[in-house]
Length: 403
Image 1 (cartoon, rainbow, N blue to C red):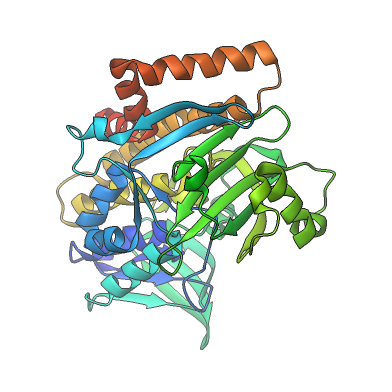
Image 2 (cartoon, one colour):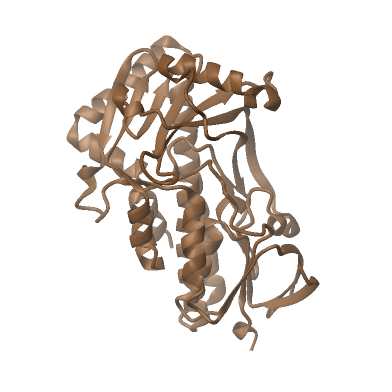
C-alpha cells in the first residue's frame, strides 16, 4: 500500500528534525535528508517561546533543552538614549503554560538533541551529505531523486515534506510563489562575553532609535558565562565585506555602549532578512513548513518557533492520516489554513510591526508608540494580553480554532 511508504523530510534543521521525531514517535517510517555533513550551525536564532518549550516535552527533548538553555523571565523595550520604556514579565502567563519564560539556546543544539533522539527509532533514517534533487508526484506516492555519498538514488515516499529552508528546492519544484519582499537592510550580529546586565539590560531587549535600532539577547554558548548577541541593521550602501571587518564591528558596538569598543568578539555574521509566505503550503502529497514556507525578520523571535509549530501541527495531521483516523485532503488542507493563516495574521504582522516600532523616525509617532507600550506594561490586563500575543500562545490557540 502506498501509505506504507516512508515519509521523506527534506532538510535536517530544527523544523525538519521536529516533524521527523514527532512522526517517528507515532511509528511512522521516516527518511530525513540533509545536504550538510552535520547539523548546520546557524547563529541567527535561539529564542524559544513558552508553547514551543511545551512541544519539546512531546518530542522528548524538553529536559535537555531546559538544562542547557537560559531561562529569560522578562524582556524589555528600551530607547537607545532614553533607557527602559517597558518591561514585560512572563510570570503573568503562569496560568497558561508550565513554562512562563523564554528559553534561549542556539537552534543547532535543538537539531542535535533531536538527532540523538531519532536514533531511538529503527524506522527512522537520517542521511547527511545528501541533497534532495527533484521529485515527481503520483496519485498514491511521491518519487524523489536524492544525491549522496553513494551517488544518485531514487526513493519513494507516501508524502514529501519540504523543510529545506528559504531557498527550498521542494518549493521551487512545486512552482509555488514565495510572496512578499526582502528588507533593504541586512542584519549584523556580533557576540561578546561582556555582561550587559551590569548596564540594566534584560537578557532579551529591543532598543528603539531613529538612526540605528538594536536588539540584544543572551545565549548559553559553551556554558557560563554565555554570550551576549547584539544585532544592528546595516544599510544597503555598506558592503558585506565592510560590515564584517572587525574595526567596523567594534565601531558599531562602541557606538552602542562605550565599554564594548574593545571587547573580544567570538562570532559575528551578516545576513539578509525577508518577509515572505508561500502562496500555498501544499500540492497533493508534497507539503511545506518552516523557512521553506515562510520567512520573517527576527524581531520578536517568531520564525524559528513557527517552524516547530508547523512541525507539530503537520505531524498531528499525518499521524491521523497514517492511522486512518481522517481524510487526507481534509486534514492537509486544514494544516494549510491553520499554519498559513496564523503566519500571515500573527507572525508576519507582528514582526513587521516590531521592526517599524524600533526604527520609527517621526519623533511624534515614535513618542506615541513608545508611550502606548509603557502604558500597556503598566496595566496588568493589557500586559497579559500583550504577552499572550508576543509569547505566541495566542497564535497557537488561533491555529487550533481554524477549521
